[in-house]
Amino acid sequence: MYIPDIELQSKAAIRAYQEKEVLRLLGYLREFSPFYKAWFKKHDIVADQVQSLEAFSQIPPVTKEDLQEHNWEFLCVDKSKIAEYTTTSGTLGRPVIIALTEKDLQRLSYNEYISFCCADGTDSDIYQLMLTLDRQFMAGMAYYNGIRKLGAGVLRVGPGVPSMQWENIQRIQPTTIVGVPSFIVKLIAYAKEHHIDINQTSVKKAVCIGENIRNTDFSLNVLGKKITEQWNIKLYSTYASTEMQTAFTECRAGQGGHHHPELLYVELLDENNQPVAPGEEGEVTITTLGVEGMPLLRYKTGDICQYHYEACSCGRHTLRLSPVIGRKKQMIKYKGTTLYPPALFDLLNDMEDVKEFVVEVYSNELGTDEILLHLWPREESEEMDRKIKSYLQAKLRVIPQVRYTGQQDIMRMQFPENSRKPVKFVDNRS
Image 1 (cartoon, rainbow, N blue to C red):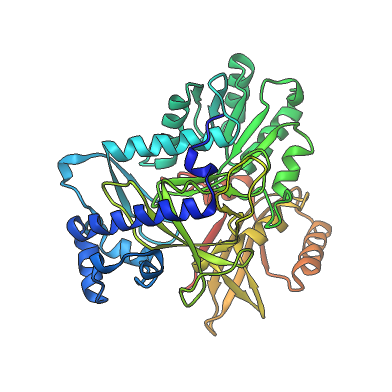
Image 2: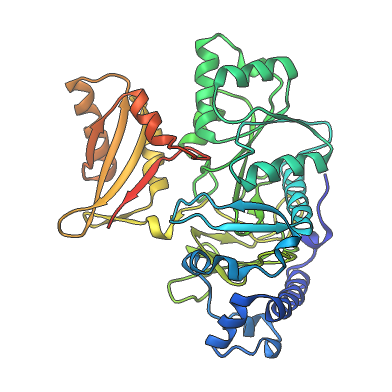
């Protein structure tokens, strides 16, 4: 299993390395980035006078809105050097274009290579990719290239269609699947229905993307338990975003996603842009290292996490991130309670009487948040309605609005045209 040397170094050595790379990036942006040239001027930052990470932390962070509004001003190279155009998913507004040079593509492959190594990947593995590799989706391309760099086999099956997934598992016998946890639950249900003994198949590992499988204490959440209580496979959680072009991936210890310090400088900041302590909630703020096309400096992702700094049993001394607690813009204030969508997802995933769901949030006439749960129940009856609402009241202490719907309508909501992953949260607030 390959571990980059920098990840085994002391915290002081990692910090010294990162300080050198961050200062190198500052010089690059000062020379080549139209956006950051203007940003430094606007905030009276003399880039070549910033000589430490302490001074660097005084530079005002950049937000997703800045990136959306000034997208092409972040480009540091001539368009003739761009090898690939990708976009963000657009979950929080207009999708952002992220342009990558050939050097950036090589960096991305390296990122996924060391991430799959972190998740116990070897060249003898065969990976089944249950996700899209088109629609300008960076992750699908990154996984594929990382697996190729690892020297492992790969099946590009794509998302959905449990029958086709199982046909490939039975014929080609992959060792590892890469997919969304809620879809893995559907795979298990399909296998039961069609008398497939999942624990006699070749699959021993699952790299889980797009949804949490753990609580913040790293214990398995409802989704994680639903998988492992039926399927004897090892789960590895990941967290990444298109903008950071880097992934945080769990090792076998399952104690958070490991930071790759050669690829990213990461801070967790509070509402006042001050660093939070280990174990406290903060907004993940990233500075990309080694990116040529569209590097980002102190970019606030909108994702709320916790971090931990104790050395891991795997030997790495790097920061570890918790599962995403929520997205800052998706925070719901409902009748005196603050909620993030992942907490609602966990609650709904635990309801045996609900097959699928979409959480909608909108503003009422007073301008406060209202929640509407679109639920596909196992059956529609007064007794089922009472059972579901009783459960919601017990867990939330209030009952959101509930609208029951059928499979076709819920699938239409979850997979709108051009979607790259299931939509479980719809924000219609004004």
